Length: 352
Image (cartoon, rainbow, N blue to C red; front, side, top):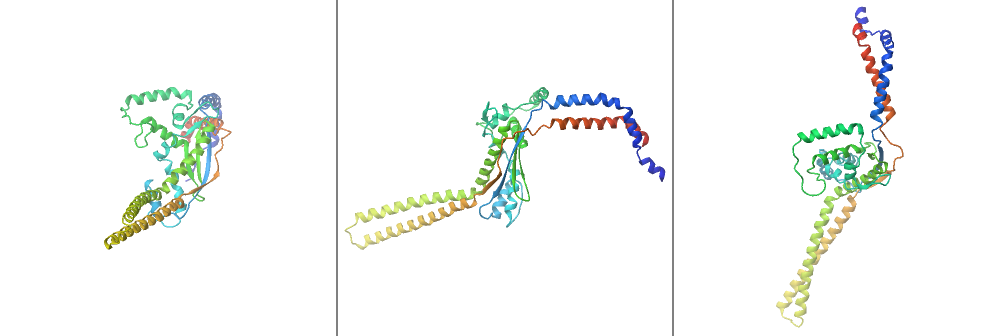
């Protein structure tokens, strides 16, 4: 029994002695790792991050049916949820940031670099004005050449701009890049929404953080009030039709009365009463529809959510990365572990 236990114990003293005897190997390998790490990490472009925090405030109570329809469009099945739905609704925001329609809508935002040398839309900025590591440029070009060589010929999409429904390969690559640079997180306890934008330029990161906040607010407002706004348009159409019918009926009644002022025959009086009654019905219908229209307009305002900005976007002063010293230290630590295991592999095998 003791023999089996001794076999399972590794003699650390012998292991460290083996490493100490081979210490010259570390003197040769670690400087090489340090130099290679510096060569790799220092040309990497710096990036900055800007964030915005906002808390949604919902006007009125949220109907379970409306929440279910919103959730189903993003792949969620909330079933017949009743009250307390306000705490769940913000959880859909991160899913919204993966929507092509939402991301493509960000491409038209105008951005300006911190040195004021460039002002263009976000799509052009991402496509043509991104700094790249010169060490990886040749490899990326070679990879792109090989990809283009074996890729099937793309069918050109008609029209101008990026089509969310049918993007080409390059636009889809930009769409995926935006998904990594612009993120949205939700605090499940407080429902505070945090929008974070990472970019190579500090002013662009702050500009996009604030613009994405506005884009999100407008997107949510339009979505929440879409049904009510459709009702408003419907009742406006009905009101216009009812107004035209009332004006036509009123004109017929006025013309008939003007043309038969001196007539006292019962047939003319009956016709006048019929026109007057018809005009009254048209007026009542028009008044009722206008009342419904005003109610629908009030419902749009009721369903419009408000957003309280807890933290506004500011231009970052210091870059967020890459962490060059941490990267170099991490590579040295990793090289030390791997080299140590390589040097003591014989001792470990012998002990086992």
